[in-house]
Image (cartoon, rainbow over all chains, first blue to last red; front, side, top):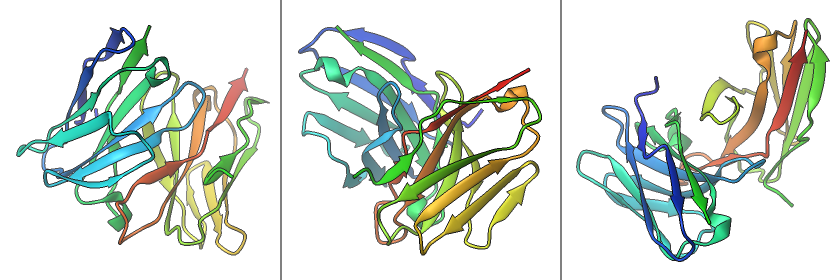
Length: 115
Length: 112
């Protein structure tokens, strides 16, 4: 519906493992932001990529890392998974940074469960 | 103190009722304000932007008070389909990354 697709939709991992989540942005959108939403909480900003460069980061440890590719799709990588990493991970794409008036469109999210 | 604070609710109202949600934000440099709607286990979707002059979209009215750092959303004639979580969102504006800062969300349950 929004043109932003995330994969996989659901994932179960074991504590200590690594995970890669993927996001295809809406056509023409050059900015991708990642958010973590724990149960009962609002989404928390992880980081943003603009034209393949990290363009801001929230209060997340270095084991959360990302990439943006030339086609503006993006990956979120999390190393050394912890139980508290269990959450809905949301990707949002926009044409330009939302702070400059650009509207962000969210993907349906990847629900990660760490056991 | 949280950057954006909302009463999590839940607000349980009958169909046809008028319900109001409030939100406060801590950073006076915030420049853009929004209400998002999130259905259970779905992604957030933009409901409406919020302007200082106040704005209306059908049954929904949003207000912003910059002096008090306070945002509100009024829903008139509630429908069953309005049942969702409403997220108050602010953005620090140009010069920043454009990250959206979300409140915890307020849950609305409209009952027949």
